[in-house]
Image 1 (cartoon, rainbow, N blue to C red):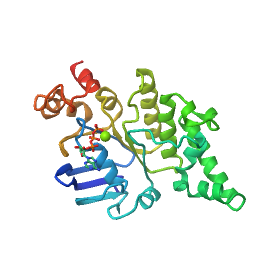
Image 2 (cartoon, helix red, strand yellow):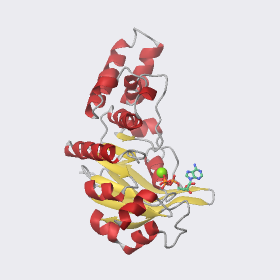
Image 3 (cartoon, rainbow, N blue to C red):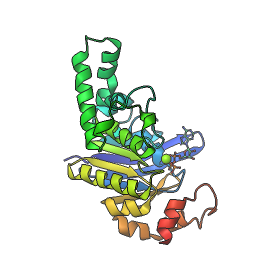
Image 4 (cartoon, rainbow, N blue to C red):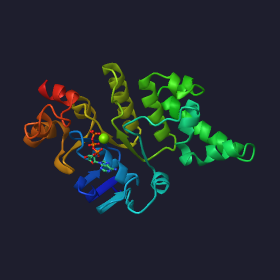
Length: 269
Ligand SMILES: Nc1ncnc2c1ncn2[C@@H]1O[C@H](COP(=O)(O)OP(=O)(O)OP(=O)(O)O)[C@@H](O)[C@H]1O
Ligand SMILES: [Mg+2]
């Protein structure tokens, strides 16, 4: 079977900024892989490259054996690669179920339904059914008709995950899905990701909470300054000296923008 995701020597440069600078990562099918690193180390940029939001400067990316580079965002999404965003991106004037339905089939069916009522009623119904299934999957079956802004922050994060799940992806990329959540909310999302894994969904999880990441991932990749500095068993990887240095900030200003409270707290515990 092909690996779910293979990044080979991937580079994404923005002028002189080498956001991703030669990253190679392999995510095995069915695994839950963690991607961690200090602020600005290139994690989001790598997810952007995998999903087609930024072009590669160099390197190769394949998802389930198919080349990703040069394809558009919808083309990559249709190949079963979906993601959530670090900052929640929900449309405030659409209901929760409509927001999630946008994730099913890139929203084309729903938009058709909204723009040409009647003609695409069936397609609209399919999208909404997929959306309701996804909302149920993330534990939000009762809130589909509400507006996103009426939901507590932790539930909005779940709606984001539901939107990514609505098209029944094969590979889910999660960019800090528990950022800003309480300990209890984090534990619930961690349980959800483990359930999705048990159902066979491959996931790449970007997260700063090292305690959570080491608890639920099978495999951990650590990046710093756009390069992989450690890759392997999560428990062993976080004990790696380079990783501790990157996080404890010995090579950086510990009070500077690259430090991260949650990570330092986890590391010192
Ligand atoms: N579109 C862009 N244009 C120019 N520079 C960019 C762009 N996107 C990201 N960068 C820069 O690339 C570097 C990596 O940013 P990225 O957002 O990938 O980091 P990150 O690891 O996700 O950080 P965080 O943990 O804070 O989310 C940063 O220096 C950032 O300022
Ligand atoms: Mg980021």
